[in-house]
Image (cartoon, rainbow, N blue to C red; front, side, top):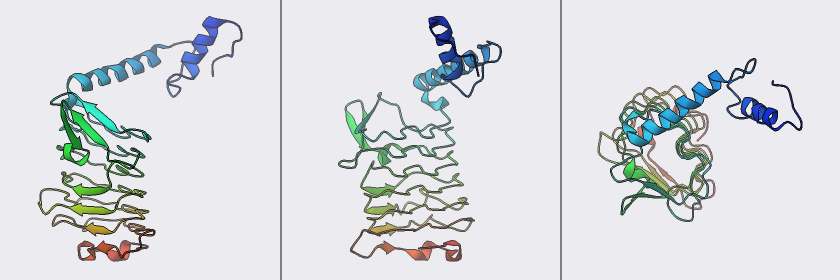
Length: 239
């Protein structure tokens, strides 16, 4: 840690820059070069993503804890996801207000969150992608997951969601490479319907513990779950 100074504004500024800003990059013997280079790389990646979204490869926790978010606005022709994006872990974690669906604006047009997830074919990690979010009240899963290996906690804690359905189109929501489905739907306490599409499979799943934990806990009506698609139910510790 750098020496603590009192009364000297320049020294206090240097301490703030050295110990608080980008605190995980150490300043050794007053050498700020590593921190400056790290900051420059961050700024460059932000500018690259702004100028050419196809260069963005990491969308993890992009909208985390944006509880008051109602609208996301993009320039015409832009999109959430890029062809090289490999992780969407926690992308919408704890996002949205819940009283109305999150809106996506592109130019003069409005879309739902699900409608703009167009190119997800390279994504490998979707863990906690929508966990504890309120972006929609019903999920219709129409995006590609053929490279995904983990969906742990993907919808965990989506307490306002009443329905999760998967499209009949076999190119969407393919899960034959997914190894972890742990807590995938856990604490979806108001869920009334959960239906799986033709490409949903648990054949590679190694961990399905607590996959349906507390599902429909606050729902008076029985929850419809198509368990015929769950191949290895012995791996589900609790329904």
